[in-house]
Length: 133
Image (cartoon, rainbow, N blue to C red; front, top):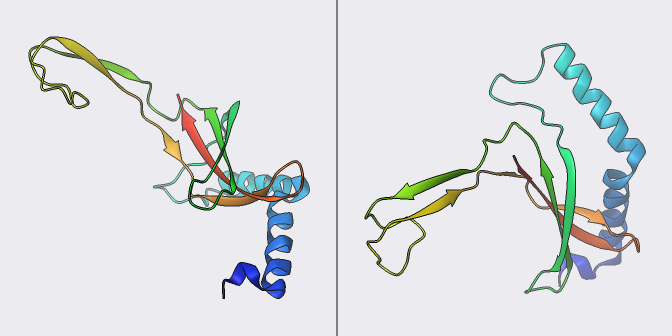
């Protein structure tokens, strides 16, 4: 049996998703991060990023059919995209074997691990956050 088929698990799961989705808890978490920053408690190899709002892509997982939201946002903490020229070389994305001149783009990004949330109908859903420059 799947854990998602057990009522006890689903009750705990809903409680967890409600807790992490509550704006009050998000505000409290952000305040905690600011305090850690002020006290110099953020590890040296880590950085807190506060992205600028962007847009959301809504789709469905092909294997389960569950809703999936991809939050696309911006920050200058991610390097800017670059366009590179090819002078007779095959670009990394060229699958034709062409030796002609051309160009290709490198678009750096940061993404979060998959997390659970609730949609506007209060149904569980999956969310990724991805940041671009």
